Length: 86
Image 1 (cartoon, rainbow, N blue to C red):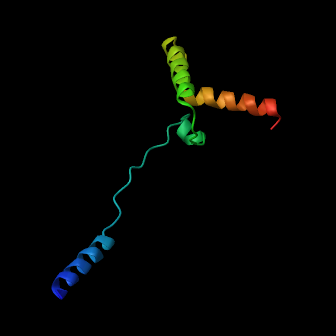
Image 2: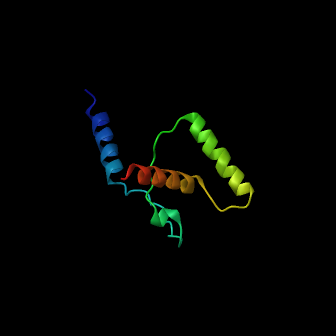
Image 3: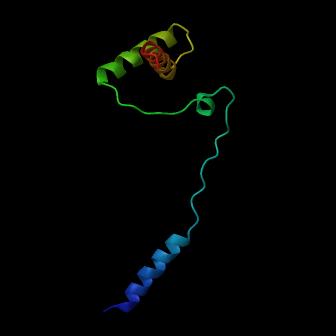
C-alpha cells in the first residue's frame, strides 16, 4: 500500500479545510431600495403569465412609468388577498 500517497492526500484535504472563506461582497443598502425593505420570494408561474407580465411592465416603462414586475405582482397579490378576506 502506498502510504506516502495517502498521507499527501490527507494533508492536502486538511489544508483545504483550513483555507479561509472567500470574501463576500458587502453591498451598501440603498435608501428606498426594495432589497432593503421588501421580502424576496420566488414562485412558479406559467410561461404565458410570465410573458404577459414582462410585456405589460415593458409597455409601462416605455410610457415613462416607474414600475417593475415586483410592483405588479405585489399589487395583484394584495388585491387577491383583500378579495379573499385574508
